[in-house]
Each structure stands twice: as structure tokens, then as C-alpha cells.
Image 1 (tube, rainbow, N blue to C red):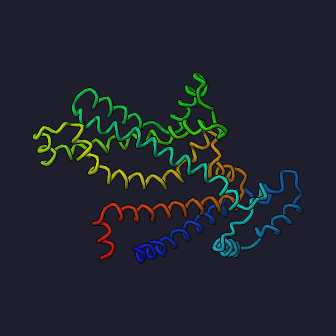
Image 2 (cartoon, rainbow, N blue to C red):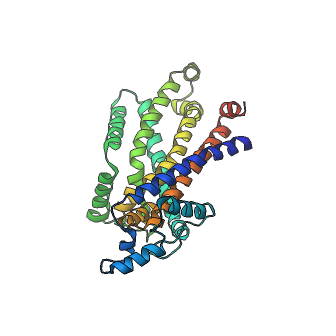
Image 3 (tube, rainbow, N blue to C red):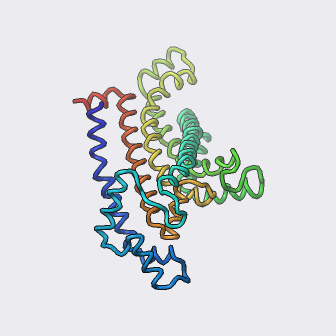
Length: 309
């Protein structure tokens, strides 16, 4: 296991290096001038030139990247131009909000998707099955920003029972979590329905039913344990998607996570903060992938033995 972990960590280093290089080049190609944004619109040309020199922006791209990456390796992601606070400190202050939204979104996916999928499979061909799959199709087709605005309008404005945005109250996470998780719940419902139908058609399930075991008992004893393995894998793969993909949800609900901070950094051309959020998110996504591999090995002995061999 330790050899596998070491090999996976080494394999991720080129990925992180590539992400940092591509991000650095893209920021360098932006038509906006970070020094001008930092100095303000009324600053003189001399002031802008002085700030550009102080920030090292007058050096070549290679020198700027080398300076940045050598500091980043030591954990120093620089200071935000706009906030004048260490980028690492800013990211760590926002990360708990993004992680909370990630876990809440996955909880919504599982809480809604799994029962709907099982109920549709058990009621195959009946109205409950058709209704469940139609709702799942709507959930897959609905864009998250549209769904978020719809929930915001009904539950925050027309029926003011939930906060309109922010993170000031404990219930503030409900609408963002529903927005982030309902689309995924639709996928889980379709996947769970398919897995359940496969298991219900197996010989040992038919034998259990022939012996008089109830349908509920068969589902709990035979269907769930066999269907949960791919669900666990899929839920683990959702973690990196949520960490990097909830930018829009955080923006719609004014949720103070890393995604919203990254958008604000792009709008103000805050180069160190843009680079820091991208690299930090990339590290989190890579770490999540390694964690998924480890959990898969622990859950399924066949995967563990294949890696050892």
C-alpha cells in the first residue's frame, strides 16, 4: 500500500506542474495589466511602472514563474494584491465553507438519488418508475444556475423560509446544497435503478424470494450491499468535482467559498490569488483521487490484490 501511495504521489507531480505552467501562461496573456489594477485608474505612468517593478512584473515570464514556483514549493503562495494578506491564509479561511458545501451536496445526492433509484427498480414499468425516471431526466437536464435561481425565488423570496444567500445562518447551506446536489441525485437515481434491476434478476435473489423472503428484506440483505460498491466509488469521484465545480453555486448564493474568491480574484486581476486558488484546488483534486484509490482498495480486495501484483 505504501509503495502504491508513493507511486501515485510521484505520478501527480507532473500534473500539478502542468497546471501551474498553463495557469501562469494564461494569466500572462490576459489583456489586463495587474500593476494598473493594483495602482488604480488615476495613478500616473511612473507610479504604475514603479509598482510593476516592485511586484516583479517587469521580469521575463520564465523568471517570474521560476520565482513563483520555488516559493510555492515551500508553501509560500505570495500575497494578494488587493487584500494584502497571504494567499495561503485567505484560501484556508475559505476552504471550510467549500468543504461544507461539498459534503452537504454529496449528502443530498445520496439521500435523494438512492431511494428514488431503488423504488423505481422495484416498481419497474409502473407509474412510480416512470415518474421517478422523468424527475431524474429533468434533474439531469436542468442547469445548476437555473435551478439555483428557481430555488432562491421560491424558498428565499416567495416563501421566505430560507436565507437568500451568505453563510450567516445554519440554514444558509440548504439552498446551495440542494442546487449542487439535485443534478447529481438524478444520476445516482438512474445508476441505482440499473444496479438494482441487475441484482434483482440474479438467481440467488430469485431463490430468496422463492423461499418466502419479503421484497424489503431482499433489498436490504442482497441488493444494497452489492449495489453500494460502485456508488461509493462514484461518491468519492464527486469530491474533486464539487471542490472545483461549485464556483457557480457559490456565486449565485453569495457563499464565501474558494470558488467565489477565485472569481473575485479574476475580476480584479489579483495574480497571486488566482494562481494560489488554482494550484490549491488542483492539489485538493489530486489528493481526493488518491484517497478514492485507497478507499477502493480497502473496500474491494480484488483491486488491492491487483495493485500489489
